[in-house]
Length: 179
Image (cartoon, rainbow, N blue to C red; front, side, top):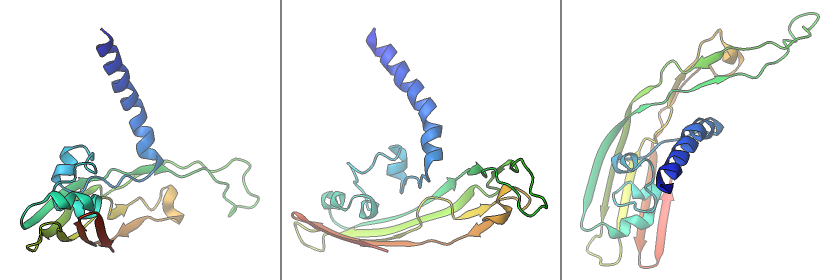
């Protein structure tokens, strides 16, 4: 009898809190199909080549040589409302601040989030080596209306971002580097 009440409470709390958590910062998203399939809960059981970026210790469980190639499609709907401000360009300045409308990213779809990586033991029993190049999930293209609140801020951005990572977990030591 307690179980449905607890489940209902947790479901309600998650529904109410999730928009607040998403608006509080920038969520990058899950890297790779397994991480996305696990709802981003991948750190504790990183068991594919994407572990090179998420949790290099997970590479130690990979056997043989693994080549992983993938792509994700992203939908990053992003909107905000600029804080009200007084327009000091008018003489005399108005007594009430200028209120801005909510603006929305006009290009939320991201078609290419590639990942290419390889891991291998290189014949060693206690070591695994991995290299990867990938585009991090997230917004690489944003476009906001020029007449909206962000007209003095960013109205257009297009970035090509490629991350590189290398790791070598073995024994009780982990060497990891990324750029």
